[in-house]
Structures are given as C-alpha cells and as structure tokens.
Image (cartoon, rainbow, N blue to C red; front, side, top):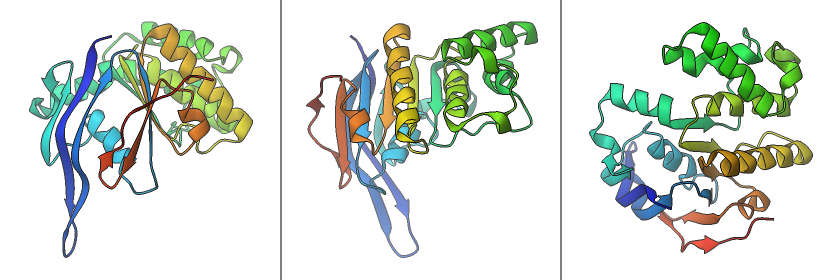
Amino acid sequence: MSVLYRFEKVQRSFQGPTETIDIFTDLSFEIEEGESLAIVGASGSGKSTLLYLMGALDTPTAGRILFDGTDLSTMTDVEQAYFRNKTLGFVYQFHHLLPEFNAEENVAIPALIDGKPLSTVLQMAREVLCRVGLKNRLNAKVSTLSGGERQRVAIARAILQKPRVLLADEPTGNLDVNTGKQIEDLLLKLNREMGTTLVVVTHNMKMATRLDRCLELRSGTLSAEETLSRA
C-alpha cells in the first residue's frame, strides 16, 4: 500500500487567556491508503483536533500534513472545500442530519453541493442507503428513525461521493452496545469492500482492536504503533 497521509513534525497550539496551550508538540506518522486506523486517548488529549487537521478543517501551528504528497495548508479555501467534498467522508458521534428532510434527501446533499443533476443524485442516494441496510427507509423522516438508523444514514451520506478517506469521530459513542457493534461491522465492511481508508477516533477499545492499527494520543504525542488483529 502507498502512503496517503504523512504528518511531519506537526504542532498545534492555542492561545489561552494567560498562556499558550500545546495540543500536539511533535506528531510524525503515516497512514497507508486502504488501511483502518484507530486513534485512542483520554478525553481532551486532542483526538478530535487531529481528525480536523486530517480533514483540512484546521491547520497546524507548525509542521506539515501531506495528503498524497500535497501539503494541505497550501490549498486555497476553495481547494480545501473541494477536497473535503470529493475526497473525504465524515461521520460524527451525533449524526447531524437535517430533520426537515428524509433519509434520501439527507444523503443526497454532498452530491447536490458538487453540482450533480438531481435525478442522478437521488439514484446515488438510494444505492448507498440500500448498501447500508436501509432499503425500506428511503423516504423516512429523521424523527422516525432509530439512533442506529440515523447513524447509517450519516454513513451513507459520508460514502456517497466514494471518498478515499472516511474520518469517524466516536461513531458508536451515542449508541447502545448492540447497535454500536452493527455500526462497527458496517464501517469495517465498507473499508474492505470499497478500499476506503478508515480513521476512527474512539474511546471504544473493543472497536479499536478490530482495526488494522491503533495509535494512542498522550501528552501531545502518539505512542508507538501497535499492530492489532481484527476480531
């Protein structure tokens, strides 16, 4: 596999009222295309910030983040928006669905923003909803969906554009154990079948052990990589 992400001595600091707060001090690591990676760590360790950096939603204070050889910080705002729409898919702990729209319409939004024709977009949305097991819930309003169904809609929306990378921030954190396991299974299935690189920030160590690798974020640095076998 080829290297997709390369972090080179990345630092991220924020200016507090009286002092500078260092989130990362010297992050250097790589992510290979097609792999699945878990990032774990205590609350407040910077896991979500790391995901935002990968998604070009934030920029490092120092160092470089290369995606397929391109420094993300050198992109214009328009280029970064295009990168997020075409190359990345995002899944969050809270689904962030629009309640006034049904499942199919929620999923269609990224491709509509991309300028694709409505008929094409709706067909794409139907296909991915079927892929995540919601064939019979295409026209269901968000309010009528269970927590697990809402997260499946969010995943369908994330994979609509066939992204190279799927970034998931605590995707099972708001779900019961059984439903969370179903979402884990789905994410790993998509990683295998679509070849999409999967990066998951999680407190769920059982989920973390199912991914190819697990990195622990602690005191502003990542621990030594640990190779894990999927359950």
